[in-house]
Length: 133
Image (cartoon, rainbow, N blue to C red):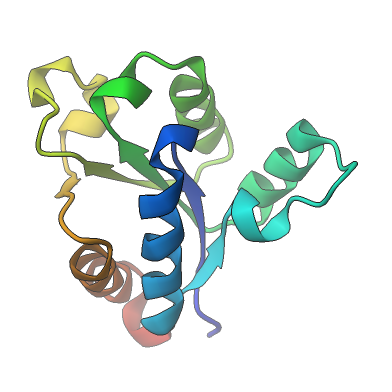
C-alpha cells in the first residue's frame, strides 16, 4: 500500500510552523498535501482546497487559540466529516481543551516542535494504516 496522503489544515499566521511540520512529515515518509506546495498563481483556492481534501486519506488540523475562532477550521472539519476522512487534531499547549469542538476533544496530539510532532503523528499513522507510512 502507498503511504496515506495527509491534508494539513492550518491558520496562515501559523504558516512557518506548518511548513516545517510538513517537511518533517515528508522526512518521515508521509505523503503530505499542503496549499504551500500545491497552490499556483491564478489557481482557484477553493478548487485546489477541495481537490486536496478529496484526495487525502486523513485531515490533520493544526489547532491554535487563533484558529479556533476562524471559520476555515470549522469548514475543513465539516468537509473532513462529510468526506469520511480520518481527522487528527494537533492542539497547541495554549489551547484550553474544553474550548475544542467535541469531535476534536476526544483524541488529539499535543503540539511540540515540528519534528517531534511529525514523529508522533507518523507513529499514529503507522498504527492507523498499518506499515504503509
